[in-house]
Length: 231
Image (cartoon, rainbow, N blue to C red; front, side, top):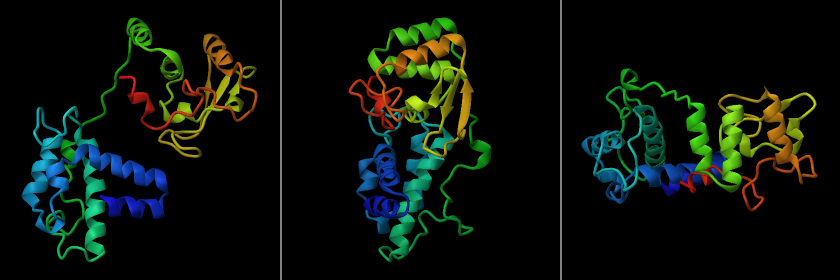
């Protein structure tokens, strides 16, 4: 795990290394994490893989919910990348525990036919009101901004700066989850009159063009998982 994080730190920066560490810590149980790589077997890894998507599994950490097959495949990719680093660095003699019979690195992944489609949920006005009533402070502002724009919280909304809001053109410029990129890419969102008024309120007290438009209660930028804390 640590070797994988160090490699990501060199190749993609500290953010990628931190994310890889968080993913592995969340989804790989202590017993498996403490097992020497040379002692791993296909059966152990498959049992762990299947446990990630099973209800009430003893292979999942307390508090973890069932995850989808597609999410499990992304976790598997992170673990396999860490294991491959150990193999390529000559820390372990064989990679047969995670390599498929055809020699592919991701032999552990669920097959495409098992991959679930994303669940699409549309809230009713009553559900939106109930959600907002359960939120407070800047977290409530973040949630309301997400409902108004459809932008991804916190990433896309966290990147919003005062200069991105144009009240005259009724637009909001969204940079994506990471500045310059993102799953949906950079784009302009056209705002309704009520949405314009909402963002005008957020712009009050922001004097620099680069001031965060929707900061946390302490004025700092939202980080990747900060929005999970209130729940």
